[in-house]
Image (cartoon, rainbow, N blue to C red; front, side):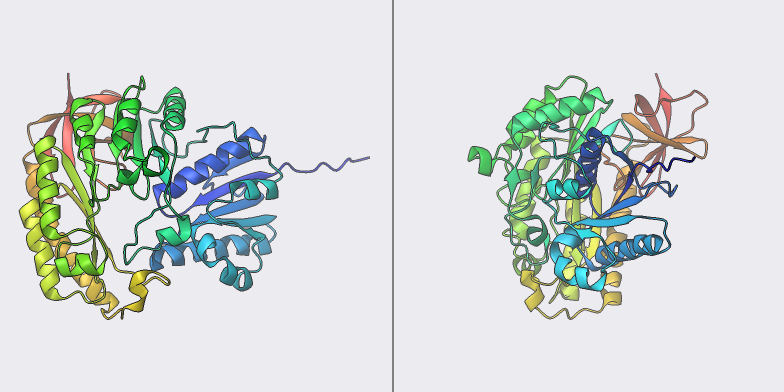
Length: 436
């Protein structure tokens, strides 16, 4: 007589959007593992029976990608290849009411702060004692470290406060414990992320405490690189630059989104800063940390933007010569302050303006990379592709910045550091050879 056995659940988590979402997925994975539930991240094998889609709802393109991903998983469920489809993340937080009626095949929807409820749905217990325990989906030598949740700013274009709530800092002690746990797993580089790094600590310690956190993390043995992402320029705490300069394992790298350079646009975007104040801040940053790599992001096509504003932005880039720049086109988001404005610039014109700005930056990037030829840098090896190794200097973050391409007859270990002499330079990448 045959005995029917119940197949054990296996959960596949699909993550869309930013690195902050990725951390949320890693935390969910760690909780499921602790509950002895099999879990994988973005598996293409279809050997799982449950899917959790962790969505992004930031801009139109991200929302479209999230919805298409949900529909793809629902189609698999309808074909009998999945038992359950759950949805979490920013899109779910923001549009749950509408989505529940439009896609009823989804088994349950969860907001950004409803991890315990989601675990309960998955027959798992939320284990509060798992402080910082995550199943890393990144290569084991680097990880993101989310130091806070939410944002108190009211930038005209941004829907993050609607989806993530008010700013809530994690304690320094908890973050140090998590960093130590990551190092034990082989992590050598952490990227500090938040909606806004520089606000860190105001709620917990009644002061901006990012510099204190940086010093504590720099003391963690085995942590070789600490990198700062998403620093807001208004009321920027200059003391963090002293720590960056004085502590060798804090990368001379700062990601500070400025969004625009025209005072008209900065005011319309509610950025709380003027072009002149930004220029003074950039000067102070470079004076305190000579050789620092400054990365910024910009927005093209905000309501009311003119070609004169674009010309001003281009002149600003030519004057400031940022090492790294990214640019987005404006997305008209419901319930943001800018939604009351007329989205009066066609999509193709937004793209044209973005391209025009990036052509200016492309030339700057090429010139700055040319200056690196002949210099030797400490490089971490991220992967090997097509017989060549791809690595990064301290001036480059994962996925968004330059790579160093290395041809080496000698085997290089992924996640190890090597001294690399730059031999060629292009617009956004470098080539080099390992030296002793």
